[in-house]
Amino acid sequence: MAVAAVAGACAGCGSGPGSDDAAGADRPVGPVTMVVPFAAGGGSDIAGRAVADGLVSVTPGLNISVDNREGGQGAVGYSYLLGKTGSPQYLLATETSLLSLPASVEVAFSHRSFTPIMKVGEDFTLLVARPDSPITSCADAVEQARHRRVLAAISGAMGPDAVVFSQIRATTGADLDTVPYEGGGESMAAVLGGQVELASLNPSEVIGQLRAGELKALCVFADQRYTYPELAGIPTSVEQGVGVVFAQFRGVIAPGELNPQARRFWVQAARRFADSPAYHEYVASEFLQARPAFGEEFGAYLAGAQGELDLVVSR
Image 1 (cartoon, helix red, strand yellow):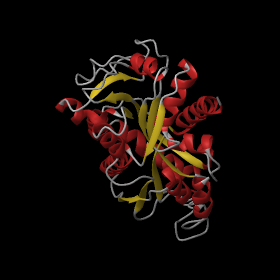
Image 2 (spheres, one colour):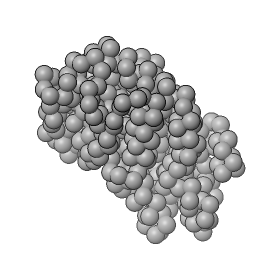
Image 3 (cartoon, helix red, strand yellow):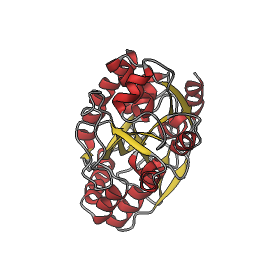
Image 4 (cartoon, helix red, strand yellow):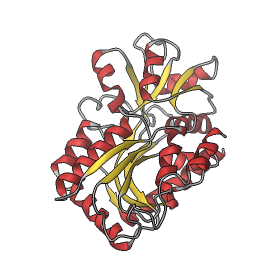
C-alpha cells in the first residue's frame, strides 16, 4: 500500500482554496502550470508538453510551464493537483493511471475529484518481443504461457499494461508472469536485454526499435488495425483469437470545483487546440487515434471506463 501512503501524505501538498493560487477565479491570471505525474521523457511528459504548447498557440497571452511530479506510479502528481481545488492556474496531463490507481489501491482521489477538460486521443498497446523469440504472435504467447513460464515487462504494477495482462488472464485463462518496471524505457530495455520475453508498449515508445528490426510486434490489443503505414501490418489481438481490446487514453484535467467560467475557458481553449495544426501534428507523431472529447463528454467517458476497469481488476 505504498501508493496509498504517498497519496495520503501529499493530498494537502501545495495550496488549497483561498490561497494565492487564485481559487474561484473566472479564468487563469498569470502563469499556468501543467503538472505531469511521471518523469520527463516518457509518453505523459511528451503529451503534457505538446498540449501545453498547443494551448498557448491558440490562446493569446497564455503562458504554461511544465512541472514533472513523478512518484507513486502517478499518485504524487494527482495528489498535488488534489491540493489545488478551485484554482484555474493548474492542469494535469492525465492518462489511464487516473482510473487504474483508484481501481487497484487506496488513494485519496478518483476521476471525480477533478474537472475533465479534454480527452486528446487513444493509444492501443502493442505486444512486442525480440526478433529471435520463439513466440510468434499473441495467440502463441497465450498458448506457450499455458505450458511454461513466460515473463512480460509492464510499466508499473498497477498501470495500463497490468490491466492488459489481467484481461488476457480473465479472457484466456493463460497467466503470463508480469515484471513491473518504472516506465516504458525500462520495460523495453528488459526485453532487449533478455530479462523478459515480452513487453506491452505504446507505438510511440517502440517505433524506433521496430523500424530498426530490434523488436518485433506480435499484435496490437485492438479490434481494428492501425491505419498508420508503419503499423498497418501488425495484426490485432482479436484477429488472432485473443479477445482483449484496451485503449489507453491521454487527456487533460484541471482541479476540482472550478468556477463554471474557468471551466468554460479551459474547455473552449481545448476545442481550439483540437482544431489546430499543432493537435494533428502531435497525434500523428505519437501514433494516437484522434478521438477528442471535451468537458462533460470526457467526464462520461471516464465514468464508463472506470466501471469497465473496476470489473477487470476485481476478477
